[in-house]
Image (cartoon, rainbow, N blue to C red):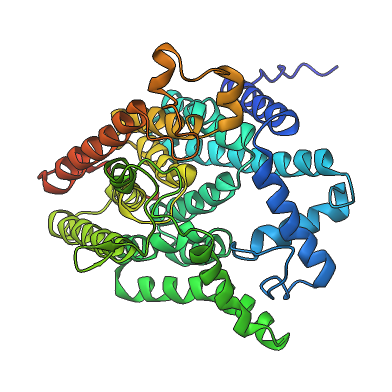
Length: 434
């Protein structure tokens, strides 16, 4: 007779599983049955082009699909089609479910990552970090309702952050290289991430991390080279530019206010002082990001710890607010990095809450399918706060102006407070590898 005591269920594990199952269920149901279909169909066109012409013909110009994504996502979708289907004629619902399952899994993976980032602070902090992303309304909207691929990028960037915190810079660089093959938004983080890596790990390990990042990029480039398609890779970069001729595409940033002042859409090649709007935007962005790097190094150069995560979040947020050619959901990376900083112990709770509200408002106010259903007659009463009559495309309503101004002011306040404060090592959220 076995008298061994029965093993009690782990309440922490049960709580974590319940949170993950609820968060995943909400996302998958939304992704499979609702949402904004344009991008879903665009992702399918990308995958069909690979299926039709080959893995390394993705950027060969044709009339069916002008691809402005790095190759990893289309390759993944073609691979998933071999198992689940979705690329056949009339299979848009199946494809949406496959895509929804992929991005939902990535979001849940990031929740688990936040759990382990917060674990050194205790069980309650770890479960709170898990729940913060599982039930974050903007994450649910972007992943579930819109079925966007941002969750995949956030997961990979989050893994890079995790590796830096755990003193494994080589893996951080390698994973970041993979992230650069997924979405262009990862590229802008390169200087900031490696600035943090070099500070945490020193010159030698930082150099090795840079080489590790180049490994996946060079492997893909060599694939295109051997296939005779290396010159077409430049079309990925030019495709991003050519498909975004407006100074902003529904992104509530500085250039949204420029459109308000102009009374309509502003194009990046329009004259602005002694340059174009596009040039002015890139100059301003470069100056702001350089300032972040200089002040962060000045105030934190002798310290180690998690303040580098907050620096990455601020870097990403400023890029969204100042750079041209951005869409409303391109701020998702900053939101994910804020969640990671909060999980580690950085005092960014108010930034995380406000960013969630502002980004969600930005996305909802430019989902015209959703707004038409909610407000069929947008010219009456308080609804003009949301949809100004005659402004159905460039929705420069009073509410969008308030949201834009709030984002600029609050981010500026956050930047000044973080970059100029004198903090002790304990206050920076120091995290060790133990």
